[in-house]
Image 1 (cartoon, rainbow, N blue to C red):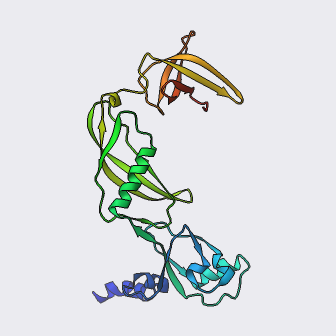
Image 2: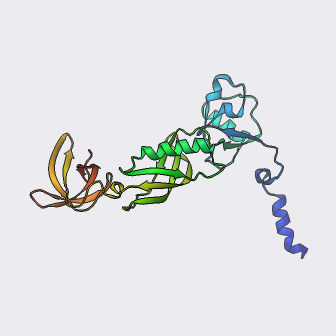
Image 3: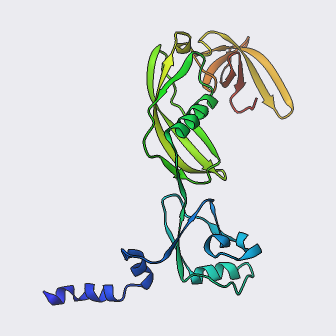
Length: 253
């Protein structure tokens, strides 16, 4: 029985020190929380003066803790021809700093982001069911909302809105917020109905041509739908950019 466990005992005895440091419950390695997407020398070592803004690479992804050793720090600095920095720690654990959002703050952010999506006429936000204890990565810059496509029926419409927090053009957090919208009779109607006439724009380089076409299906602004050219009868696909204007698929408005 003892012989059976001998290889395991030997393996644990020779485990790398870094692995041991990661698994110790009472780890004494200093922890650093970074508020931006890049790790700077000043985040790890104080009093470095002009060198404090030295870029040491990307910060860990949200929710990830990264162990950075003195050897790694030295190599990163030497790659930028920087030597002799004093006070480098033997190791440091780096993670992204989180900030809590109060219910009022989250409600304001969600409402503004939802309104920025340009809800179809006749549709309004009625209520939000805010999740408790929301924390997101500190340093976020913008918040956008993803709202599902509404149904074509009047009344209350429950839906889940996804808030996307971004920093430096990268997504750093997603928060799902249950919401209730109210759809009026006009809100249940499409922006453009099948059979209606729409102005079709065809653009190639600096040349832009407009022609009349007939909608082959119901469509809302942003939808791609079939249209029939007049008077040729040719069927093409276009993207609705306004209630009375569409752009031939593959063109830009």
